[in-house]
Amino acid sequence: MKRRTALQLIGASSLSAALPLNAACQSLDKEKLGIALVGLGGYATQQLAPALEQAKHCYLAGIVTGTPQKAKEWKVKYNIPDENIYNYDNFDTIAQNDAIDVIYVVLPNFMHAEYTIRAFKAGKHVICEKPMGMNVEECKAMLAAQKRSGKSLQIGYRLYYEPVHLGVKDLGAKQKLGKVKMIESSLGFRMARPGIWRMNLKEGGGGAIMDLGVYCIQAARRMVGELPKTVLARGYEGDKKLFKDIYESMYFQMEFPSGSISNTSTSFNAYVDRFHAACEQGWLELEPAFNARQKPNLNLNSEEKITFPEQQYDFQQVAQMDAFALNVKDNTEVVASGEEGLIDLQIIEAIKASAERGKVLDVDYS
Image (tube, rainbow, N blue to C red; front, side, top):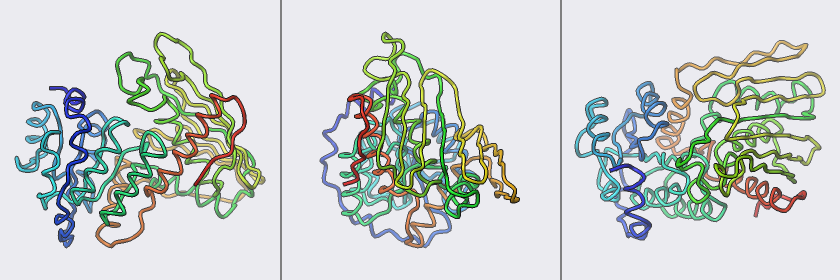
């Protein structure tokens, strides 16, 4: 059975299942924390599982899949015990498995809230892939579930831990090039294929702005060091037979309290990947900027010699997941927190509303 079919069959009925919280009393005196990947699509297969082989503080302990053949293949490839292999019908029984410390939700966007909340009910820590939820309401429900559980939550923002992006953030915070005046960023991939969930409004949540635009939003607000106060957006439908109910491309502008402006384009029908920041005393550019398969390529115009550290692993997600494992073990604050995920959805909702209404809108952070 295909994963998507299995997910649709179980529906939301199991969401309300009451789960024991005794699993919350697990011992974390482990050299490595066990992570279970929920959903074995391309990202989990090609990025997360290989990254976990290089991680120092966590490892691939279990999987959740609706495809029996995948379960067999992953069991052999990663030496996963039978008792750590779950499907979507018995997912909630993971609460009794002390080998699983963290659940990583790698499902389509419309499943993020459900499985994150269920994972918290099972007494597990959670990493939820971006975007955090389909809307602000879902994000707030996820944060409430986290608070009730007493567990930690990280959103899968790999670039929050990537050395070059950390260097860009630090450069902006210390104003090493002076005040940020204008940012231009673009991210787009050709995903124009009928039938994939990202093209479906009810499953993806609204096109490229959800899956790709979030990177551009983060890069801008982290370098400026502020949250945008207003947004102005316009969406383009393109091929209406293919792009049903979602925009093919979205263009938006964010204005920050200090006066910095960010202009962004994002698309599901064109390849582009760049970030450019013009400052008072120089500029920097990343191209590529956001791709998980390539290291950001930095071009910096500055009289001062500025160097950024190199990535130590083949996969950006190694630093992301190791950082979360240490947050859990040491009970420290998560950088790519659920609160960060909520902020991005608040901005995205304002952008989507601006595109529909055709005017500048304030961002509501309440």
